[in-house]
Image (cartoon, rainbow, N blue to C red):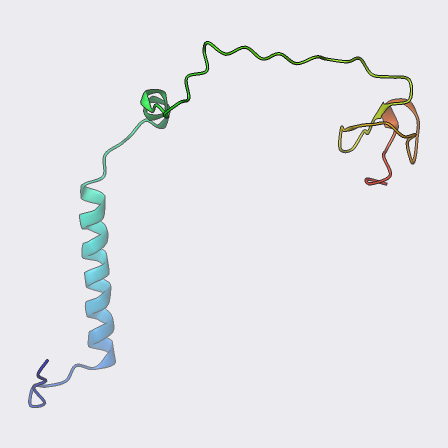
Length: 97
């Protein structure tokens, strides 16, 4: 690319002002084409391949809490060993203690 060294050079202020004007013009151009999209409506019409699970049934065997188990009051995980601290609803496991 050829450079013409005889042309008057622009000061930093002029370059800064031009760049601000260009940015403002780009922002106006970008916003003019914006369309309001209802995200809920867009999500309803979106279909993922293989996502139709209406005919599927889950078969999970639920076992009630055993005598040697407790639920940690911080992480809400069921543990098989005795709590590190507390008893009953305030029991905390060793990892959370």
